[in-house]
Length: 152
Image (cartoon, rainbow, N blue to C red; front, side, top):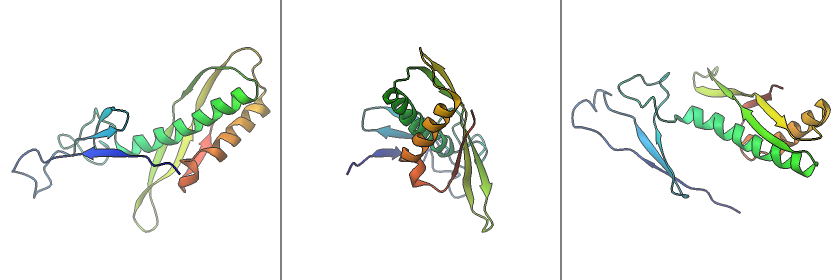
């Protein structure tokens, strides 16, 4: 089995305001490859000045994780099928909704891949099959109850 790590770093930015909820939620994510990413809450959830609008928020990371996993499997399955992918761009979108019990959840992620093919592009049925296989194989998609939809 494999293990994956991320280090999340946050520290209080001052003595005043914490008890009132007036503190920065800006933090960073550090990954084992050495990359450190600025992070913060969604500006839809925590307004300025308490967030970090330039940072990645957990909801965006969730959408990106699903889209990235799908793309990696799609490109590999295309390669195995003898197809050449020149470019894959996905403007994925997640929908955050309130459940019946009042809790918020990412109910749906829509993938919108635009794919540029080299010679011998697959037909629509083959592309649909590649997306189906990529979704079935995606570790992240297999780990969540979120509906994942691919718009072609």
